[in-house]
Length: 530
Image 1 (cartoon, rainbow, N blue to C red):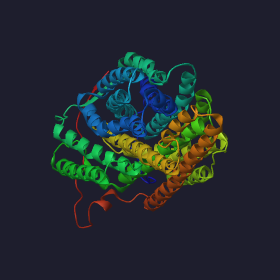
Image 2 (image 1 turned 180 degrees about the horizontal axis):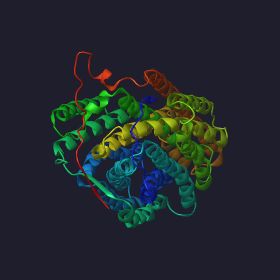
Image 3 (image 1 turned 30 degrees about the vertical axis):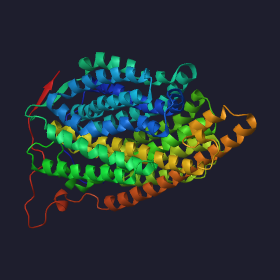
């Protein structure tokens, strides 16, 4: 996360086939963005139809990201071994099947299981696409442009997802939003083998299954414990704390094993590079903030302002467009200004957007909400592009899958925690404000309150709705204040890191009297197939 003062040797330029391949890689990127955007809008409808509780709603939104984050590192390393194109095709087929299961779910548990399978399949897509980009575009300028276009597709898809999902919800049942990606996956399965070359490490070692188990045992209990504590569930806080402790213990065991293995699942020595590790942390915090805001504002527009799904989806579009524009213009900006200026200036813009969002009331316009989150998204864009380029570009070709998985894990893990923590904070504020309501069915979620009000006489329904909408808006304001604090921390951390500029890499890992360690990843031959 710093300006580079070194000159890289000129790398070969990519040709027509590589750029056509980039277009093919945009397909799974659009798919993942469509999925999460449509889910936010469908949540009130599926909750009412499946009678999902507040906890089940959180698991429906969270489990996809939990499994995605848990398996990304494994899938990144697996792609280095068996071939990134092959893994991408396997994931596309799995995502297609799981999407059908989600669309036709008949119970909250069935939908949660389908979302979990979608997460596992999705974990094969993200690192494969980024790793293939880093292999296909070795010229630094072209790689930066390719990653920017890839990110534009991702966030542009996030903008189109709610719009298309809203139209579908207007005319079809909630399961239709999960079918958005099925034609996309079919198209990828057809054109992928034609346009995408295969890359794999010729000397890749066997995947360490013990490390895979340890990584899952570390990530999932910690996320579960934090989510339960933040949501204030009826389960014992001791159980939640114990889950976190168990996850930390397994994380220590995982770390110890990775440092001892000659070919680890995750090369932790890369984190000795301050710019590498700080980029991952900054993207984690920023993505968590944006995801939490997306969850809360989508429900605000639809349930508090009472908009139809199609119209609500249109008001969600500025968020995706904001970050899409931010990531698209970043390569142009850094040709005129320093990277540090682009990142810090963007964070200031995000800070302004969060301050605007904290002024929202239950009677505020959708335009104010859309503008606020769009400013946050636009400001975060440079951080995502430059951070991803640094992380992925720092790895040798044969380890591109592992590096890409780290970048994606940071973003997905951050988004997942943002959904869980900020969503739970908003839910906790709502439940606290509604605890005195005489209508028991309205105390858990705003969707429940709207459903309960529909069964009451007009004289009782309107006061209940007003109280529930005010309670939800209070939760949105608290989430905005939380976002302000998080972005302020990211800004301070980025400021301190960027001031170091291009310090020597050995500075953080060796003393002047020590000889520097060899590169964490030695060059090894790659197998490249057409």
